[in-house]
Image 1 (cartoon, one colour):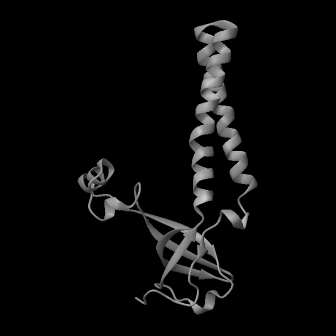
Image 2 (image 1 turned 90 degrees about the horizontal axis):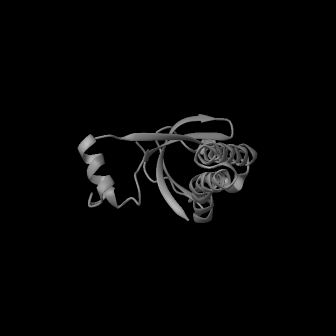
Image 3 (image 1 turned 30 degrees about the horizontal axis):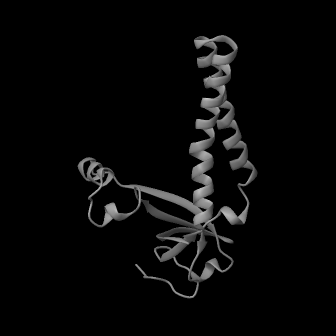
Length: 150
């Protein structure tokens, strides 16, 4: 399970709005900045916050400003990454290959673009279809403990 700290920024009935610092890559950049992405982030001095909605049955026990530990299954991240990055690449290569077989260079470019667009639509369809699937949503890891009160 992947874990991340988040701060509660708003509450609604049955829902907590949390904000987490969007980190780059593996997270080691926040510790020592040895990779290229960490060095680039230090150079640009950018921080981005990600605001997401978490379903919580007992949202009244949390206060705005509390920090929680959120978790997401690794399998969800792997499948999502493969779908997001690999499917458009396969669509591009398959379309370009078919276009080249059927009509040469111009058809290869056209069908390659069509293939990547169709794959993008497939990714969008999958995201819309699973928007409310609880298996794809982060959860509060330790509901009995609030990490800190601000």
